[in-house]
Image (cartoon, rainbow, N blue to C red; front, top):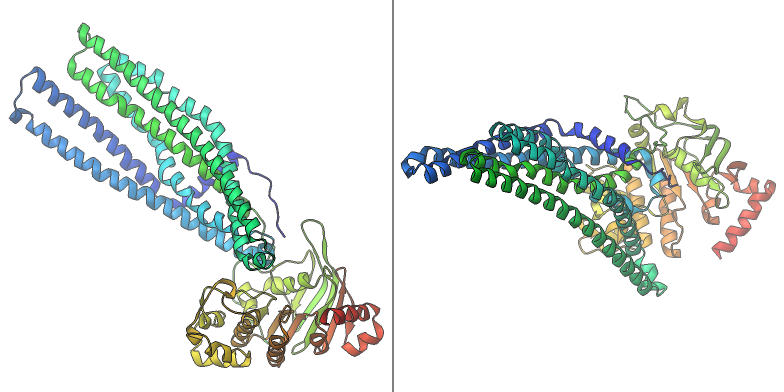
Amino acid sequence: MTQHQPPHSTPAITAALQAWKSQSGFWIKAAILIGLISGLLLIGQAWLLAKVINAVVFNQADLAAVMPWLWTMLAIFLGRALLTWCAEQAAFQAALQVKLAVRQHLYQHLQQLGPAWLTGERTGELLTSLSDGVEALEAYYARYLPSMTLVVLIPLALLVFVTANDWLSGVILVVTAPLIPVFMILIGKGTEQRNQQQWQKLTRMSAYFLDLLQGITTLKLFNASQREAHMVANMSEQYRHSTMSVLRVAFLSSLALEFFATVSVAVLAVLVGFRLFWGELDFLHGFFVLLLAPEFYLPLRTMGTQYHARMQAIAAAERIIAILNITPNSTHPRVDTAYELKSNFTLHLQDLSFTYPDGRQGLDRVNLAIYPGETLALVGSSGAGKTTLVNLLLGFLSPTSGQILINDTPLSAIPAATWRQQLAWLPQKPQLFPNTVLENIRLGQPHANLEIVELAAHQAQAHGFILDLDQGYNTLIGEAGQGLSGGQTQRIALARAFLKNAPLVILDEATAHLDAKSEALIQTAIKRLAQDRTVVMIAHRLSTIREADRIAVMEQGRIVAIGTHTRLQQSSVTYQQMLAAYANEDT
């Protein structure tokens, strides 16, 4: 179920962004140091240029006299070009390290949240956060953070040299410099909210579009594809309008920054010009000051430009932080310690209860023993607690109270990797990946050879149709089994279960929504799979229920009856009503 998180404040998001900075190692510091060295070389370059112009214009120096200065200037040009490239590489590495760490952290956290949480989320929205959201952090770490430090260091260094040559020019720089960040912040406050709204629109549009693509077959069948296409077009148009609105504010911000920087340089140039005319300032120092003035405002203007990277990162990070702040509801410890689990085990469910975050009671004090080698069917109406019980057995959820014992060991004490090796899970809609049939079957045993894979496919009644595919086991299939029928997809998933050869098999009505021929093939494969294995299945079909060794009847999160099919037919009114309902569905 989706757990909606309260919106995070900008200071909280900024604090998280700063905390992630530790993943960048020394790369951000290197980018800042290189940028500072380049700024200091710029001062030397301006001084040499001023001396060359002064010597040639006022002292009639020839080329030979100024050639040493020109060679030094060339060396500085090349050095600054190299430093600029190094700073870009360092900044890129800093952002890369952060993105890799955040994406890995997100991926691991989503694994801990498990399929039970993922089923309540929109895939498109999650993919946007994992891809575009993480990518949006690059400009923040590669551009904004180095600029924030250099905007202090470089103007301060330039101010020292300007003031040393002309104190009045230094005063003008000090007075006019704050105008740029002040107006940047004033304009940026309006842009920040727009950026967050823009990001939310993008995630919603991505989620809607992916849902539309995944359901395109159903839409075509109900002749609703044109209507949904118009919906996508309308959403895209709204997104375009909001994007243009954000860009207008961004361009207004850039215009204001450029305006104040240009006016400030012009004021300084006019004063220097008049003072040169009046003889209050010599040309060398006046020209040197004029050369440094634009460079003094350049880091401030750059910071204004990169300030938008900060706002975009805040908008993207809000959803990332919301995901990371969700507490995993996992049964297993995060650290896999050494543990040996015998394959011949009994499961004991003791006073097992689970309450969903919205207050719904999933399970209510369930007590049940599941013995080795038996087939247990879970039956009940929708919302009775069958799926919740299966999710607890799989370790996707943690019980609110009570516990699951594997023999005498609590499931919470068994490492996730160890427990999952004992499980084979076949849901109603198994997940197949865009890869070959071979790789999809040996998902649980990646190093299995072709002979063993073919044996598993034979047992799952899948070998015949696989050989009929264009390239047999090397045939590429699309996401979620695109290109295969529902029955073929289920049989490949069954082959995966046979190959894994796990002692505990959990089935969620594997024959639902299938035609009679596919159902018969899969029922035959399931009977073979159940031999010498413990099977827990959610069942709705009468044919499936009758095959079970025991049947647990669930109602409102409790087990109200348990026994064989014959016994429950005689003793349980609830079971009798379910049989009647299931019989109607089967017909």
